[in-house]
Amino acid sequence: MTALRAKYPGENEYLQAVQEVLESVEEVYNLHPEFEKAKIVERMVEPDRIFSFRVTWIDDSGEVRTNTGYRVQFNSAIGPYKGGLRFHKAVTPSMLKFLGFEQTFKNALTTLPMGGAKGGSDFDPTGKSDAEIMRFCQAFMYELWQCIGPDQDIPAGDVGVGGREIGYMYGMYKKLARQYNTGVLTGKGASWGGSILRPEATGFGALYFTQNLLHKAGKDIRGCRIAVSGFGNVAWGACTKASELGASVVAISGPDGVCEIPGGITGEMIDYMLVMRASNRNRVQDMADKFPGAVKFTPGRKAWSVPVDIALPCAFQNELSEEDARQLKANGCWCCCEVSNMGCRPEAIRFFQDNGILFAPGKAVNAGGVATSGLEMTQNASHISWSGKEVDEKLHFIMDSIHEACVKYGTRPDGSIDYVKGANVAGFMKVASAMLEQGII
Ligand code: GLU
Image 1 (cartoon, helix red, strand yellow):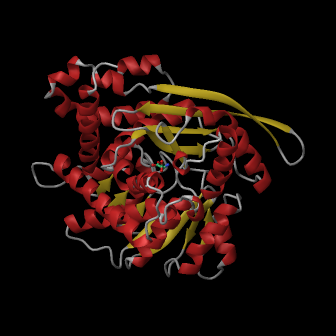
Image 2 (cartoon, rainbow, N blue to C red; image 1 turned 30 degrees about the vertical axis):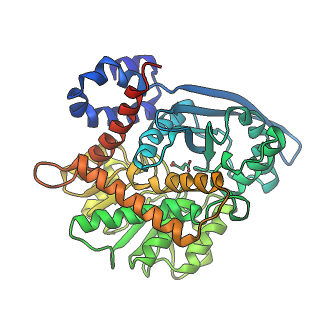
């Protein structure tokens, strides 16, 4: 870590993600001198390669705009590079390196043969028209297409990139590459190669994992009050499945504040989340404006200020601080399943663990998204389409396997489970062994 900090000063998210994994795996790493001999850690923390490119496009007023695009191909030990694209004004190489690093272990946990990657741009979709989104996506793909391929690197969505953006990028990819293999991107529309249930998969998988975790702890999700941050695709899937399982989502939040829903979120409200996302306004207050009476908006506050049993961060990295963790506990919260990538600050995780609050990390909880992308790739490669029931069963099985792997590697001597250690060690062992078996490259 000392060497890495000196080499990449200021790459805080990346250093934070690496430190968490290295702390978790230290003990098992030291039991394997062959890993040390092959310098597995030194090789694993460094991306295989990073592409960086200029993206120039024209906005609706005719003004020329320039952004920076990236693709970080992190690790291909267990399969072709796989991971999403993030369009957000705060995107930097550090952010995409952290995400690519996490993706490598997450993908290893899915049981499917996928390596890790991440990409994106500092393009800010907030307030952009549909035509501007399309022109940006096309300009982005104008550079990216040479770096990707169905057996090489398969991007998908992430923050700021959903089905609409994947559609625009896929259209442009075909025009440029003259390759018509649907498997080059995942998260496609259902009528042109997309998997049924991919949009729901991250949120559904997160709730299947949460159910397993609660079951193991002798608890039941029915009747639990849940706070969710965000109102994008992941939060939408999580709210849908949580409600279906008999829990009550009583808070959702956005960058502008929190919406409290004392009676629990309804199907109509869940549908409205999609409208809010598509509007590019990035305002959760719109929910309160649409459902006055049932929803109360408070500006400047987070979802973690609302009394709940379970907290589900579904928005962005480091969105839950130690102070938030303390407030959650003071209000009676006893479980936090991280759905966003690295959603909790390390001090918040420590606080949860030291205070007996059940906690599981994003790379295990949210792996259902990329796992279903893996299932989309399988359907594309065999030119078939599975039913929703088939995909859901496979997703459920994968989430059960991930939970089992966490229990296998994370059970403490007192029988409780350290899900952070469990997920990190399970992912690490798989990637490290694959690297070792493939020689010094
Ligand atoms: N962006 C998602 C993640 O963080 C999904 C990636 C994918 O489907 O390739 O895992």
